[in-house]
Image (cartoon, rainbow, N blue to C red; front, side, top):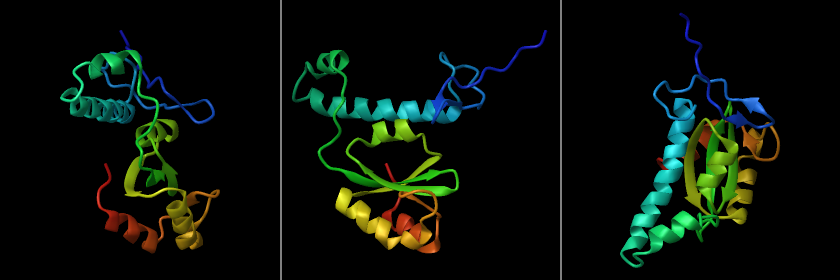
Length: 152
């Protein structure tokens, strides 16, 4: 008897399936990468919830019935590896942005909004390759990312 492998059930971009094998013991068909992303996404929400429980014991029930939709007050500039490119962008809700873009890796973040993002686009303009926010990982861009240290 031959058992067919199960593949990740997520779709990337314009209806491209993930094509990675699903984890065999997963209750839902997700590959290891997407399982990790889902875990990190929900771990951030749970951590924020624990922080609020001391102030508001009913915070849990409020979160369960009204999911978190708005991002934190402070925006960040992020550096994501997508294929062979580094995407430099900004967001107020990093976990939602990670879910939307499904990068290969979140390389780093730094506090800042649109102005800082524009500065970084100018700073690394010589490495711009694919679209407005996609850059080749040139040596000065890699050095900048390393100077920011590990992200989240």
